[in-house]
Image (cartoon, rainbow over all chains, first blue to last red; front, side, top):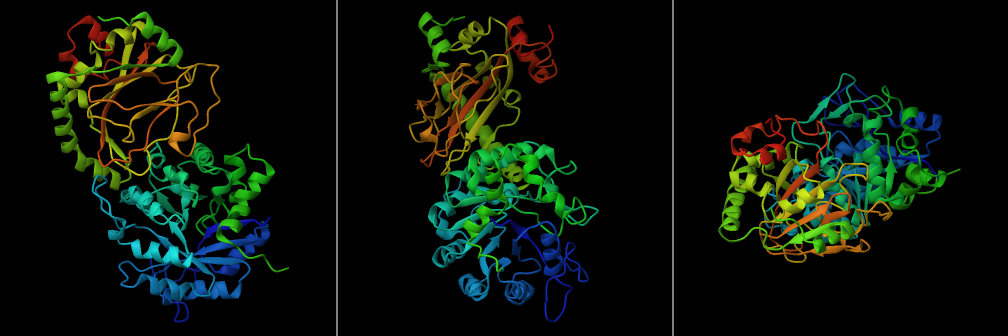
Length: 299
Length: 238
């Protein structure tokens, strides 16, 4: 069974060949190329990875992602972005995903009413066309919704039960104003001690096409690796979603310096110490291979 | 004080729950509904802001510090409809841990799965859930697994679907119904497929243990606690 890192980012310096947006987390001169990722993967016997677009949502911003997918077709699958308020999201999605290795799209907003008590019509949600396209084209939706959008999720999953959904980073839903960068340039998300997502994203467990990443621990924990204070969250996710719907990921490159890629390859066995060998293998790659339909790696 | 009947005592011991129909009724119920709705509306926007900030769950909210907002909430704590049973089951050594004056939004999935609140080693932990509006079947009614409070019961595992819990019983009821249960038992809120929010008040009690609740916890309502019994219930200084 392959080991698959189910959520990483790669990017180059800004260039005419590979244009991208410049942000505080991705300054113009920083680069974290695919070859660097492949180097640490090789070192730690990780076979494949999901490259998640960073640096902009336009077609040209995806140039480097598409380049990597084309260069290493048996190593990577890709997740793209859709521009906010794109008038024809289905066209954008099809252009990016047509034979390229991009298998799905990441969403941060779901575009429904803010008021949890308001009457919901999913066809009025701004992301409805994206979900409809995903259902028609069999794209995966990669979700890291804001706290205020978490309540919208079951309406969309109910409307499109065939769409494969991956909840990013422990199913967390960051609050407004709670995102910062730490001294190492890593995302930090301030969360409450009581896991509020027990009442929202964790409740999505009843929908069989919803899976969850076991990743991003460094961003939510105030403790050092292996982030033992999050062991309970992992246990709850295991209990609710079951062994076949959890996927390990590192969130490369943010973890390279602290705690290090190698440490993250053993985090699951530290936070879920009672797993059998085959259960661990499922989380470390078997589930991603099946759910995301990874190709076999060339010899 | 109305003590439980032998039948009620047996049911409590064996099944882990009791239902008090019409526990709150008449003008008191009307006033409770009015006060509940007023404060729920007053507090809703602040709750939504907290949801947006990632500081509150998005599927239900509680009116903050309800005992300080209206004395009717204080009167529910030692309401004669069920207070005698609470005292009986705790050997007349009852303390309040806190109230949750809760509005649960209609949602395709229940806001919580099946769970016990405490383990067997915890001092007797009792909750009383009072329906403020009518809660028919399929609209977020309370669910409980009878006998699951007993040490030799189970093991239980949270099912994906609320209705798949083996041996469970659901408790649809009219406004004013109070359901008392041993929180060691597995319980939940069933799915709410209606378009009506579930409004209820959950009162949390425990058999007294030293230092569990300090005298400052409910000091803000001290003026409403003039009898020795009430001061003891609210862990206030004599």
